[in-house]
Length: 414
Image (cartoon, rainbow, N blue to C red; front, side, top):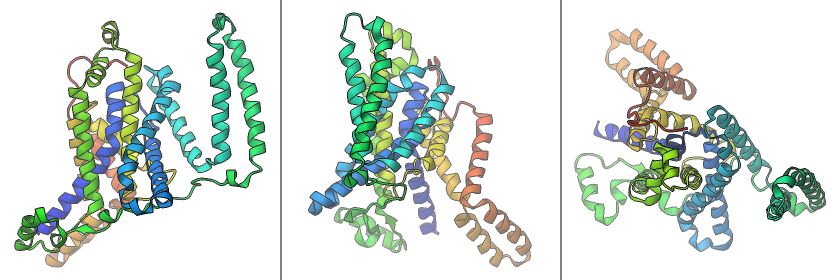
């Protein structure tokens, strides 16, 4: 009995930690900036692909240190997705603040572009993008220094844009004859990542480290000698705790955190006090995107890397942010645990075995147990269980529309 309770508790916490890690960056972007970023799942996907690239790099050039690739992949995923987030904020989001519907549609378009990008990326595409950016944006940067730039801007764009596209197209056609440059880097298939050897085995009382020998002895004394947990899940739980503490300390103990909170409360007043609001917006978006990259790196330990993997987490991550209360980290923790509990309990592996056990013990109630088993076999599938969880969330939001911890004081300025 104790083993079953511990197993349920561990599964709830591990599922909740994955949800929370996926929602943490979204909580910052949506909670603090009021931006509905539908490309958040694709930023997680980029973090996962960067982890795959780092692992492949270790296999090629540092095979002896392959066990340590994860410690390199985490900062690489954070920095790479943060840079993509800065480009997204400066190129798209900055022009749409205060217009949530347009932001939602624009980020959805970006998410589709990113998915197709990882499917199609090869040497020719990458060189073409780099060449176009060099010609168009480089040309704009040079021409912007002219005295009469404002009067000639439209004419310069009308000439530079088709010229850059034409040169890029010709260069891509010529480079396309080289087979080495036309091989797809990732394609549309899912890719598997090899775990470090120190995450391969489960952790049980038999193989606990020496400093936890007392815990192993106690577990054996209470009959938990067969209880074991996957090390990958423990690593994700630990990573979630570290990220939560880091975000909390950053927002509440640093100057940039103070600036972010000030801009969140009142953008106009913050600008009057000398806070660079545009830099704060870009920095906040980069932070949220970087956390999405770390989440993407973490989920490679529990599944394959593919172009559609971000879509599996985006809806649940939004639910965590909405149920927890906009911009409230503690609320996000409770929401992640609550949703993970509902996800775990409303599943065919949990309810159906329970009713089947009761069915054998209480014979005269067999028809009733059979109807319960039929009901939960239908609603316990992965898709229907998600429908039930969403129904519970909608019912909860009818009672507390602003989430578990609604924001107090002045509302967020959009």
